[in-house]
Length: 114
Length: 110
Image 1 (spheres, each protein chain N blue to C red):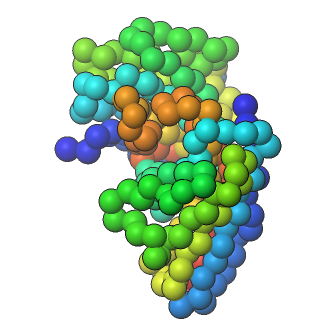
Image 2 (cartoon, helix red, strand yellow; image 1 turned 180 degrees about the vertical axis):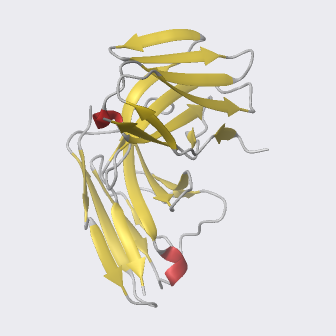
Protein backbone atom coordinates (compact mmCIF):
# COMPACT_ATOMS: atom_id res chain seq x y z
CA UNK A 1 0.00 0.00 0.00
CA UNK A 2 1.10 3.57 -0.64
CA UNK A 3 2.90 5.44 2.12
CA UNK A 4 1.80 9.05 2.39
CA UNK A 5 3.91 11.72 4.04
CA UNK A 6 2.31 14.99 4.96
CA UNK A 7 3.86 18.15 6.33
CA UNK A 8 3.68 20.12 8.43
CA UNK A 9 2.15 17.77 10.98
CA UNK A 10 0.78 20.71 12.91
CA UNK A 11 0.81 24.48 12.85
CA UNK A 12 -0.62 27.43 14.69
CA UNK A 13 -1.40 30.34 12.38
CA UNK A 14 -2.75 33.81 12.71
CA UNK A 15 -6.03 34.92 11.26
CA UNK A 16 -5.71 36.27 7.72
CA UNK A 17 -2.58 34.31 6.81
CA UNK A 18 -2.25 31.29 4.52
CA UNK A 19 -0.73 27.85 5.03
CA UNK A 20 0.40 25.39 2.38
CA UNK A 21 0.30 21.69 3.25
CA UNK A 22 2.41 19.26 1.28
CA UNK A 23 1.60 15.64 0.51
CA UNK A 24 4.12 13.17 -0.90
CA UNK A 25 3.26 9.58 -1.91
CA UNK A 26 5.98 6.97 -2.20
CA UNK A 27 4.57 5.52 -5.43
CA UNK A 28 2.60 6.76 -8.39
CA UNK A 29 -1.11 6.89 -7.69
CA UNK A 30 -4.07 7.70 -9.87
CA UNK A 31 -6.23 9.53 -7.39
CA UNK A 32 -5.30 12.05 -4.70
CA UNK A 33 -7.79 13.70 -2.40
CA UNK A 34 -7.87 16.26 0.37
CA UNK A 35 -10.16 15.81 3.36
CA UNK A 36 -11.00 17.87 6.41
CA UNK A 37 -11.77 16.28 9.74
CA UNK A 38 -13.29 18.40 12.48
CA UNK A 39 -13.70 17.16 16.05
CA UNK A 40 -16.63 14.75 16.35
CA UNK A 41 -17.33 14.92 12.65
CA UNK A 42 -16.80 12.57 9.75
CA UNK A 43 -14.19 13.14 7.10
CA UNK A 44 -15.37 15.72 4.62
CA UNK A 45 -13.98 15.68 1.11
CA UNK A 46 -12.62 19.06 0.06
CA UNK A 47 -11.49 18.24 -3.45
CA UNK A 48 -9.95 15.73 -5.82
CA UNK A 49 -6.47 16.78 -6.88
CA UNK A 50 -6.11 16.23 -10.62
CA UNK A 51 -2.69 15.88 -12.13
CA UNK A 52 -1.92 18.71 -14.51
CA UNK A 53 -5.33 20.33 -14.30
CA UNK A 54 -7.59 22.19 -11.90
CA UNK A 55 -8.83 20.33 -8.86
CA UNK A 56 -12.45 19.20 -8.61
CA UNK A 57 -14.08 20.80 -5.57
CA UNK A 58 -16.97 19.50 -3.52
CA UNK A 59 -19.96 21.61 -2.64
CA UNK A 60 -19.05 24.23 -0.08
CA UNK A 61 -15.37 24.43 -1.02
CA UNK A 62 -13.91 26.89 -3.53
CA UNK A 63 -10.60 27.28 -5.27
CA UNK A 64 -9.95 30.77 -3.94
CA UNK A 65 -10.08 29.50 -0.37
CA UNK A 66 -8.44 26.11 -0.91
CA UNK A 67 -6.14 26.24 -3.96
CA UNK A 68 -4.69 22.82 -4.79
CA UNK A 69 -1.81 21.82 -6.97
CA UNK A 70 -0.80 18.41 -8.29
CA UNK A 71 2.19 18.74 -10.60
CA UNK A 72 2.83 14.97 -10.88
CA UNK A 73 1.52 11.55 -9.82
CA UNK A 74 3.14 11.54 -6.38
CA UNK A 75 2.84 15.09 -5.01
CA UNK A 76 0.10 17.55 -4.12
CA UNK A 77 -0.33 20.69 -2.06
CA UNK A 78 -3.34 22.23 -0.38
CA UNK A 79 -3.31 25.88 0.65
CA UNK A 80 -5.70 27.20 3.23
CA UNK A 81 -6.02 30.89 2.37
CA UNK A 82 -7.01 33.92 4.43
CA UNK A 83 -7.52 31.74 7.45
CA UNK A 84 -10.09 32.27 10.17
CA UNK A 85 -10.60 30.33 13.42
CA UNK A 86 -13.31 28.31 11.65
CA UNK A 87 -10.57 26.77 9.52
CA UNK A 88 -9.06 25.11 12.59
CA UNK A 89 -9.23 21.42 11.77
CA UNK A 90 -7.23 18.40 10.70
CA UNK A 91 -6.45 18.30 6.99
CA UNK A 92 -5.77 14.89 5.51
CA UNK A 93 -4.22 13.88 2.22
CA UNK A 94 -5.27 10.55 0.75
CA UNK A 95 -4.52 8.52 -2.36
CA UNK A 96 -5.70 5.46 -4.21
CA UNK A 97 -4.82 3.61 -7.37
CA UNK A 98 -8.35 3.88 -8.82
CA UNK A 99 -11.78 5.26 -8.00
CA UNK A 100 -13.64 3.24 -5.35
CA UNK A 101 -10.52 1.38 -4.33
CA UNK A 102 -9.47 1.84 -0.71
CA UNK A 103 -7.94 5.13 0.22
CA UNK A 104 -4.68 5.41 2.09
CA UNK A 105 -4.15 8.41 4.32
CA UNK A 106 -1.35 10.52 5.63
CA UNK A 107 -1.25 11.38 9.32
CA UNK A 108 -2.80 14.76 8.72
CA UNK A 109 -1.99 18.37 9.48
CA UNK A 110 -3.49 19.71 12.68
CA UNK A 111 -4.18 23.39 12.04
CA UNK A 112 -5.09 25.90 14.72
CA UNK A 113 -5.99 29.42 13.69
CA UNK A 114 -5.87 32.12 16.36
CA UNK B 1 -31.27 11.54 6.14
CA UNK B 2 -27.50 11.37 6.07
CA UNK B 3 -25.91 9.00 3.62
CA UNK B 4 -24.07 7.04 6.31
CA UNK B 5 -25.11 6.83 9.95
CA UNK B 6 -22.73 5.60 12.62
CA UNK B 7 -23.17 5.75 16.37
CA UNK B 8 -20.28 7.88 17.67
CA UNK B 9 -20.17 6.11 21.03
CA UNK B 10 -18.04 6.19 23.06
CA UNK B 11 -18.06 2.45 23.51
CA UNK B 12 -16.16 0.93 26.42
CA UNK B 13 -15.60 -2.81 26.77
CA UNK B 14 -13.41 -5.08 28.92
CA UNK B 15 -10.42 -6.79 27.39
CA UNK B 16 -11.36 -10.03 25.67
CA UNK B 17 -14.89 -8.93 24.81
CA UNK B 18 -16.44 -9.21 21.36
CA UNK B 19 -17.02 -5.75 19.90
CA UNK B 20 -19.73 -4.99 17.37
CA UNK B 21 -19.55 -1.75 15.40
CA UNK B 22 -22.28 -0.82 12.96
CA UNK B 23 -23.24 1.58 10.19
CA UNK B 24 -26.37 2.05 8.14
CA UNK B 25 -26.50 3.70 4.74
CA UNK B 26 -29.31 5.13 2.68
CA UNK B 27 -28.29 4.68 -0.95
CA UNK B 28 -28.74 1.19 -2.35
CA UNK B 29 -26.24 2.07 -5.09
CA UNK B 30 -23.37 1.81 -2.63
CA UNK B 31 -21.42 -1.31 -3.44
CA UNK B 32 -17.99 -0.83 -1.86
CA UNK B 33 -17.61 -1.00 1.89
CA UNK B 34 -14.64 -0.24 4.06
CA UNK B 35 -13.66 0.00 7.69
CA UNK B 36 -10.88 2.24 8.88
CA UNK B 37 -9.18 2.46 12.26
CA UNK B 38 -7.86 5.80 13.45
CA UNK B 39 -5.60 6.18 16.44
CA UNK B 40 -5.33 9.52 18.16
CA UNK B 41 -3.26 12.00 16.13
CA UNK B 42 -2.89 9.57 13.25
CA UNK B 43 -4.53 9.24 9.85
CA UNK B 44 -7.18 6.58 9.18
CA UNK B 45 -5.77 3.12 8.44
CA UNK B 46 -7.63 0.67 6.23
CA UNK B 47 -8.79 -2.42 8.12
CA UNK B 48 -11.26 -4.16 5.85
CA UNK B 49 -12.51 -3.76 2.28
CA UNK B 50 -15.36 -5.64 0.68
CA UNK B 51 -17.72 -5.21 -2.23
CA UNK B 52 -20.27 -7.95 -1.69
CA UNK B 53 -22.81 -9.06 0.85
CA UNK B 54 -21.68 -11.58 3.43
CA UNK B 55 -18.75 -11.90 5.76
CA UNK B 56 -15.06 -11.25 5.32
CA UNK B 57 -12.64 -12.32 8.00
CA UNK B 58 -9.10 -11.16 8.74
CA UNK B 59 -7.62 -12.39 11.97
CA UNK B 60 -9.69 -11.08 14.86
CA UNK B 61 -11.71 -8.82 12.57
CA UNK B 62 -14.84 -9.75 10.61
CA UNK B 63 -16.66 -7.37 8.30
CA UNK B 64 -20.26 -8.12 7.51
CA UNK B 65 -22.38 -6.53 4.79
CA UNK B 66 -26.14 -6.87 4.45
CA UNK B 67 -27.13 -5.00 1.31
CA UNK B 68 -30.82 -5.83 1.69
CA UNK B 69 -30.88 -4.01 5.02
CA UNK B 70 -28.23 -1.43 4.04
CA UNK B 71 -26.31 -2.39 7.14
CA UNK B 72 -22.61 -3.03 7.66
CA UNK B 73 -20.83 -4.30 10.74
CA UNK B 74 -17.35 -4.83 12.03
CA UNK B 75 -16.76 -7.45 14.71
CA UNK B 76 -13.62 -7.58 16.80
CA UNK B 77 -12.99 -10.81 18.68
CA UNK B 78 -10.83 -11.06 21.79
CA UNK B 79 -10.53 -7.29 21.94
CA UNK B 80 -7.24 -5.85 23.19
CA UNK B 81 -6.34 -2.48 24.71
CA UNK B 82 -4.42 -1.81 21.49
CA UNK B 83 -7.77 -1.89 19.65
CA UNK B 84 -8.74 1.33 21.43
CA UNK B 85 -9.26 3.80 18.59
CA UNK B 86 -11.94 5.41 16.47
CA UNK B 87 -13.45 3.14 13.83
CA UNK B 88 -14.90 4.69 10.68
CA UNK B 89 -17.05 3.01 8.10
CA UNK B 90 -16.95 4.19 4.50
CA UNK B 91 -19.06 3.42 1.45
CA UNK B 92 -18.78 4.18 -2.24
CA UNK B 93 -20.57 3.57 -5.52
CA UNK B 94 -19.66 3.93 -9.16
CA UNK B 95 -17.63 7.07 -9.66
CA UNK B 96 -18.55 8.87 -6.47
CA UNK B 97 -15.99 9.56 -3.77
CA UNK B 98 -16.01 7.63 -0.50
CA UNK B 99 -18.60 8.69 2.06
CA UNK B 100 -17.53 8.25 5.68
CA UNK B 101 -19.47 7.72 8.86
CA UNK B 102 -18.68 9.91 11.86
CA UNK B 103 -16.69 7.17 13.55
CA UNK B 104 -17.21 5.18 16.75
CA UNK B 105 -14.79 5.76 19.57
CA UNK B 106 -13.83 2.45 21.21
CA UNK B 107 -12.01 1.93 24.49
CA UNK B 108 -10.89 -1.56 25.54
CA UNK B 109 -10.16 -1.66 29.24
CA UNK B 110 -7.47 -4.02 30.55
